[in-house]
Image 1: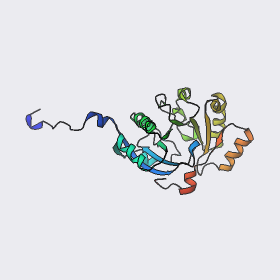
Image 2 (image 1 turned 30 degrees about the vertical axis):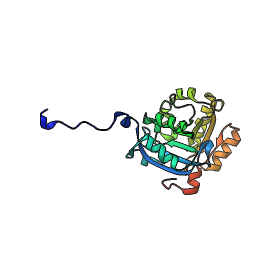
Image 3 (image 1 turned 30 degrees about the horizontal axis):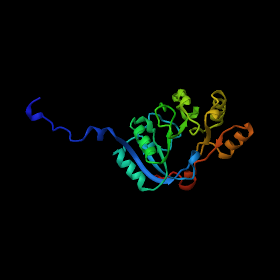
Image 4 (image 1 turned 180 degrees about the vertical axis):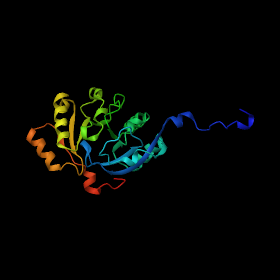
Length: 230
């Protein structure tokens, strides 16, 4: 390389680069799912996901986003004055520095939940975080990606969420509930795919089979449909 090809050295400190995340959006809303439903919550949506679930409603988070320093993310979260914070995606654990963000949010005194697909290892997640972990049913198109070893890393305050798009999905979920003793590990949530399964049908299946699960609908869809930022 000739002298004319010499490039200036980067002036960005390595530590600053190391503590950045690609963010799709940060917004202040009402939690619509899991055990924190109804609480005013700040959502931090990370960009990227290695899965392609058929019924996904956040495909806009697969690409793009902006690089943000973790300390800047913390400052924006704090500006909303909410105790509850939900780190979501996409698949937030696809960015390894998500673990740093989760730890720092807990250190700042927030009640932190993590929405994760169940396809990536959750063992290193700060134990103070409430993991809301999917198990992907067959009609998602991604049931082969379930990382079953994750079940051994769930704590009593965590939750397993199974999104159900058909009677076949329900029967699969009922079988998994028994085979893996899911309800003995933590709370189990059954949720209907919006527009695919009638909520009343799913509720009646659960009642008929006397399942130890919590039925849930997505409150944010009832309030704002699929509007961005909610």
